[in-house]
Length: 152
Image (cartoon, rainbow, N blue to C red; front, side, top):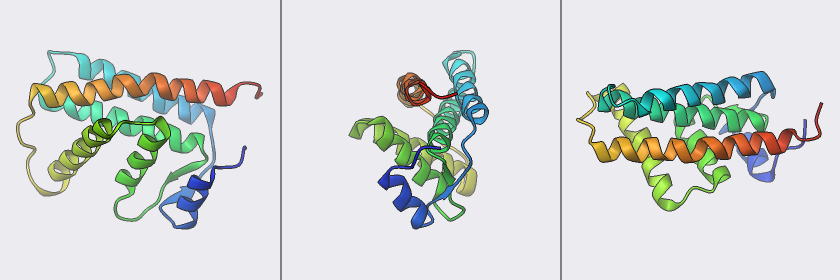
């Protein structure tokens, strides 16, 4: 396995990420899951709430693919999901607006999961998170394809 970047090594040293085995099959499955969730999130017959959460989970699946591609996984501490998403956003070069969309989706998901019912989801919120997943999927595919060139 290639050495991890300094950014990844620092996150592992701080316990934010953990070293993990890199498996092409696992990475491919994360990407396939994200692609399947994107197809479901695009389906207008699904509820806005469902579409929003599917797109968010698709983004998290891509984040897991990117982390594993770099031989890491989220740590076990509090904030492990947002740390994974922040590293993912940095790797893909998200704009500040895209980072806000991703962070808002994460915060809304956490509020629903841990504290209260999810508030009504607007069409603009659905469009934002689905568009972000649509933009991220080809970037992750390119990263993985580029990194596997010349490898057995």
